[in-house]
Image (cartoon, rainbow, N blue to C red; front, top):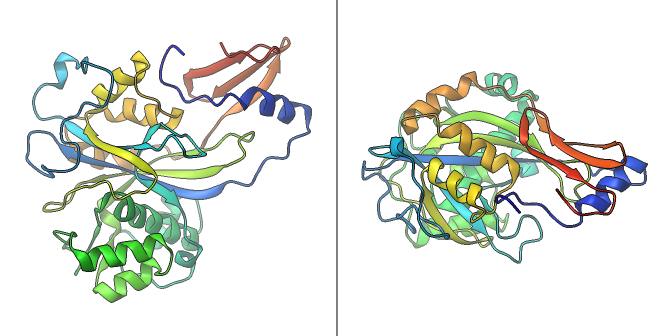
Length: 316
């Protein structure tokens, strides 16, 4: 493996089955993930679980332009035992809760109609996707993009009472709308920016239609590893994560490394958030095809992920 691209060994066989028409694609489940950002050197969020932005693999290989106050992104490493992308670095996220389709959610920021247009879905789905982004960030990172009013955000979310509610959300004993009502909170959709959309390839047994969002760590809140699916978390500058991936030290799925490369262009967390409304939300879906007896796997617009798979099964 020349880099850290996550590549399951069963893919060639499944790709062949899809090409031969013997594999029926699974309908993807809608999901949301959040690239939570903070400016390094600002002190915001200090004291979180891994403040040193060095996962495994020796030196960071930081580029000269990374000196000074550059944004860092919160990432978690999925447990090796996970069936999907075990051992890979990713962002907090997860599937949509169907209850968020029809429950009235206390809401601030752009309207549901605006979000529907931005995400390319109907208003019901838009509410559920935005709720999933905010809920999963709270469930997996302990960060809550909500406040008592439309122009406020909660501060410290640690404590036994908060943890009880968080655990109830994770167990789905409590819907997100019920949680907001119980706390007297309003979801701050204006603190999110829709960034990109990736759909798991048709040959994967677990498929997700994932909406990637960007957000800035709220003042006074701190991240922590609250996910049962992760064995460690880290704040890391995109350039350092990219270097780790390019060396083969950090394992990542194509959407993760692609978004890291995109985030690396911004000098601050606020700058990245401000750029989100101009981002193209056309879904990225991998294509698998047979070319001269060879399986070719590609992601449109992302040539670096193209794989040439000989009919014998070994990956190039």
